[in-house]
Image (cartoon, rainbow, N blue to C red; front, top):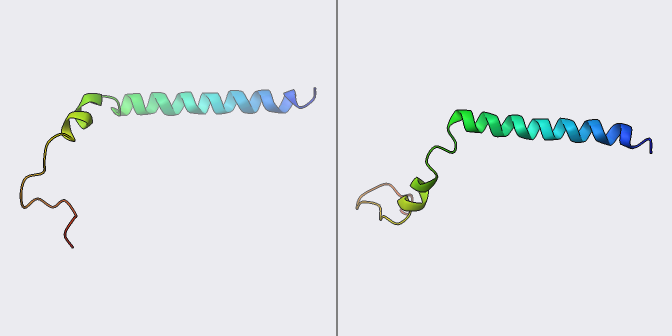
Length: 55
């Protein structure tokens, strides 16, 4: 039962840390364009572009 004295604050701290990271990423604009990447993958790169396939 004494272990709860250690586990409860650790769990609350980690939960708060995760919430702070989520709010930071939300404020930083990480979720502004969720459809952009899924649509961008459908289009080919223009010829002569630097796609990293040639060394």
